[in-house]
Length: 497
Image (tube, rainbow, N blue to C red):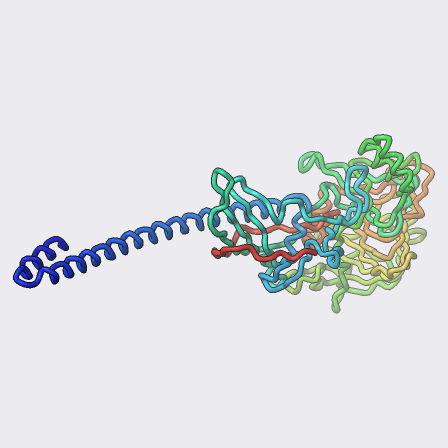
């Protein structure tokens, strides 16, 4: 088109001065040059923009890979602790604090556990956790990434990351610019339970087993490998003796025997069957409180329950509100003595559970016993709350030659059996303060933990009674629920601590 226009102009101007034709030709030539250069520059701009876009996608890919690696590290071992701590040294997310690394927040970098002695190879007590090497800055092989910030919001239980990525070519040279990825996840806590650590017998302050046996005979039709535990929170033994035993390469089974004899005062005739001795404090539920309306106040009298005109009342054992309440026979009692002229105490739970709130002592002696007619877990004795002192304000003792069946949760009670052998003692689960007065010279005074005890207690009193164990508190996260890309050209100045 430009050639045709030039020819046309030259033909029409042949009668005029030749100088004019030259000016026109030069002008049109210059126009063509400028137009061509513009088209070339525009093409180059498009090529540059395409290259930059490609580099940005590559940088984003490195940031995404870096985020996945960071999440992988935070899911492993004890590193999940950092999901509930802030890391924002450059104030990119508004907190401006570094709980991951600053010495001022060292007390927050502790993973809570209820296991007080994990043996020669396990953790004992709360675990101090350090930031894993390479968590905040690392390489994917195709580039480098950096975790610039992380913020945990306890109100929404969300954690937000900012990760920056920088792609490198095959020669290891960085491409132009970097890219940032901001992403959010949900964070929740959970209890990493120690297997078989449901406490068939738990005492807060002290256990002196003497010659008592603790046994669980599994139901072969339900769980033939079921085990339970006898657990003490404050029982102690010589640390130097432990160090010597571990240095000598003591086995796990022998170490458990060491806890049994040295920390729990077991004598030669004391045996444990499908029961593991442990030191720690399980996550016991809150002690239930008596409802305002009860079935009856027994005072110091012992009578079969229920009887006469006894009526059920609404009872909420785990405090989760009316929706969790159910009908049960609920009694209060002061001091109860079963023995001498008082016959055995029969509790029938075939119609509804029976619960006794005991404010005094319970003594069973002679050939007398508590006879429970019904399923284990449907009869419970709840004692007084823990006074916080080293002494007990209640006594629950079985001194006879017969076996009683019940569940006892008495945080301020001293409990013990002193039977005459041949399997005398109790069938049930006992949670108290002190286990003592149990030094029967004969073997066979037994605490028999019923098979399926956790499930039975859960069916009656709620899941907080079933899910009782030693544990380590850990945290878990969901997948990414929200994210956005951010293009940047330079790294922020990092602060040093």
